[in-house]
Length: 147
Image 1: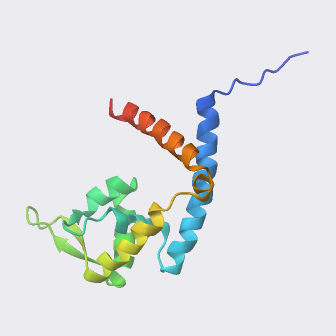
Image 2: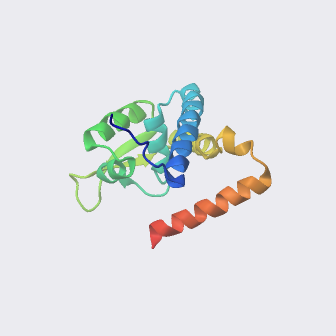
Image 3: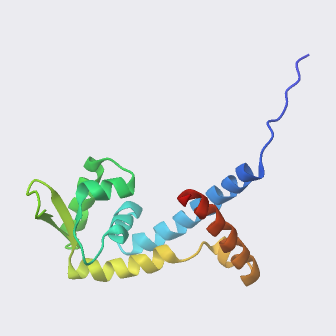
């Protein structure tokens, strides 16, 4: 009779599972708030990534969104149709299209940034001491990304 062993799950695996669960719950809540603004999560994320002071080539936005350039075209089409962004030719290469926020886009981006910056309810419910501990641990984890 063969015995099966349960793979050992590290604390890092457990933490990732918890991050994922909190993140998915939070994305649902954020998504509902963004839907009230008439935005999908991808459209809102694109607005958030656009710098009000500097046009961004669509290819660069695709990289930052971790998606194909064709997906950015659809996102840009919908944002442009709402008057939130404009496509402009890049000064260095007229074939390159860059997105720039309109005044309405800047205003809506501000609301998006507020919504997307809210901490997940599960983290906000922790004590301030636990929030600080979590922040400090995550800061150390991020330092590993940069080293």
